[in-house]
Image (cartoon, rainbow, N blue to C red; front, side):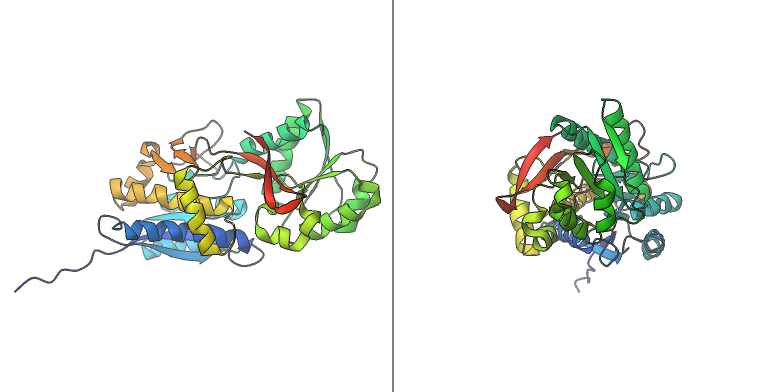
Amino acid sequence: MTPRTHPAPPARIGVLAPLSPPGWAEAGRHLVAGLELGVREVNDGGGIDGAPLELAVRDTAADPERAVAAVDELARLGVAALAGEYHSVAARAAAGRADALGLPFLCSSAVLDALTERPTEWVARLPPPQSRGWRIYAEYLLGAGHSRIAVAAQPSAYWAAGTRILRDFLAARGGSLVELDTGAPTPEGVCDALAGQGATALLLLAGHPEPVVPVVRAVRRDERLAGVLIGAPAGQPELPSWAALLGEEGAAVPFLRYLPERLGPLGARVEAALRERLGEAPSFVAFEGYDTITVLADVLRSHGTRRERIAAAWPDIAVEGTRGPIRFTRTPGIGVWQWAWPPVQVVDRDPARPGRFRVLHSG
């Protein structure tokens, strides 16, 4: 009698993503779409040594407490590693818990420099740290002639860190930054606070769609603020809902995104597949999701599913991602393994065609 064979148990990856408010659910949807496309292609190619790769997705809603609870649950379920998260405050909470549990975590899309309170071997990250991206953004502002910048920010460790980065960079080069005393950045409060400040640019460090969309409308329609540049370094204008809600008023708002000026063959193929999957143009967040699976699949094939072996593999990784070769290194001031370096662009939507992006600056 031929002995019965049993399929290999799946290799499971736990996923954290903001899929409901107050998290930016649209970004979470793009992130998960990229992850799922990567998994489908891995499994179509034979899986991980014959075993299927599976995702266990949990919604953080951008809540640090929910993120920690999800990490605990996924650890109990026996996942080999964690992936995902878009919001820095949730990612920081998840990274700290993953470090404490000895669970490898590849952060897909959160940029806060201090992702962990102490250096750790358990956490790696794909996007650039906030200090790099936001300095490139400040460099663009100065080059475009904006040396007095106003910011309207919601209370958050992420927004506060961004404000410090911008202030320090501008001050060292003769520029200045003023924080508008608006409390919660309501449309009327932002406009009133901005008028008379002498700033030529206003950066909106706040959530999308509320309160950012009403603020953009109010500033665009305020005659006192004609000619003031609106900026959104965190990338709010990247996703389709921005254009759908704001139309022409949402054009010419520079933001950061992590894509090369031109995709290579792999990136172009993945872009087409993501577009079909999403039913719309994929954001850089979707590419980050796909690249996350590219990295983790390579590690699982070469090092197996034991957690300590995955964490030990970060410095050995060398894979081709959709946006270039991916390797991880230790970066001064950053406590996690960091891809050095993802491409960084300052981009806006073309006023003539808000569905089209213009690359304004690369770093």
